[in-house]
Image 1 (tube, rainbow, N blue to C red):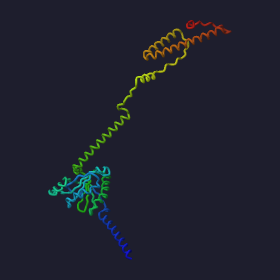
Image 2 (cartoon, rainbow, N blue to C red):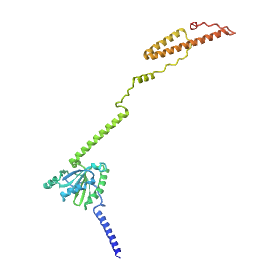
Image 3 (spheres, one colour):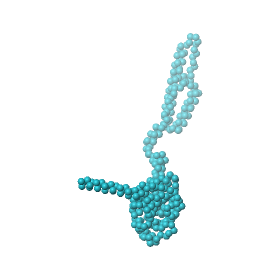
Image 4 (cartoon, one colour):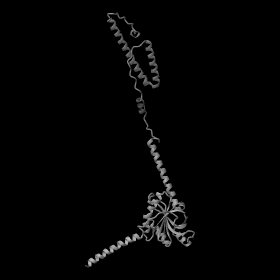
Length: 337
């Protein structure tokens, strides 16, 4: 019986623990509605003490804790400049600090000196007529965490869908409410000097990287197209002579010719002689030898044709036609020769 009571008490305690955790989460605002509107901002002109930070937004908790430890009764503020969905986490810029005064009120000089002693810098943020704003309950230490996961995605969608020039994102913990706002004007006045310098440095590095990539692209294109300097291979003289001789045209093949008259032969021989002279002058000694071989072959062909013609005429003379006597052809000059 005692074991049953102990088991029942354990189950009861476990159930109470679950109810407590669920109640605490709901109390912290996990399921609170997020209503985004465009209108007057929740704060006016403010003077803040801040420290510039660079890195993932998830690591901003210690910075808020540090500022709250110096002025526990002051409102905390965070200014986030980059979109973590676009900018790498280690390059995200933000500033965290405390609100020293609001409106026309002057900040406490002693409190300002205390923050400056711990390395904080002072800057005044202007009042803007319109801003994108929303709020989230600040009831427990985990409320800012729930607010970040609930508010920022919807706030970003609201600005993107309506194409609003709203930046940077401000988070102000004031009492039991966390205010979120994005100014629609005078945005540059909300950028601290360190964030501006970091942006210029980042843009300069990106410009250098872009120039380097362009130079590499141009160099690669030149190497592919061959427009750059190309090393010419050194060819020995003997190789050049071989290449030159290999490029010479083939000699024309001799064609058998019919017997021609003396004048035509002389004209043809003159043409061949002039052509051979021109070729020999233009081509050199190698062409002279080729022309001599061609002439010798032509002469042999002509003599062979003349002998064939003489033998044919002799046969016709020996066998005359019965109907009409064939007259003996007169021998040509070539035959007499």
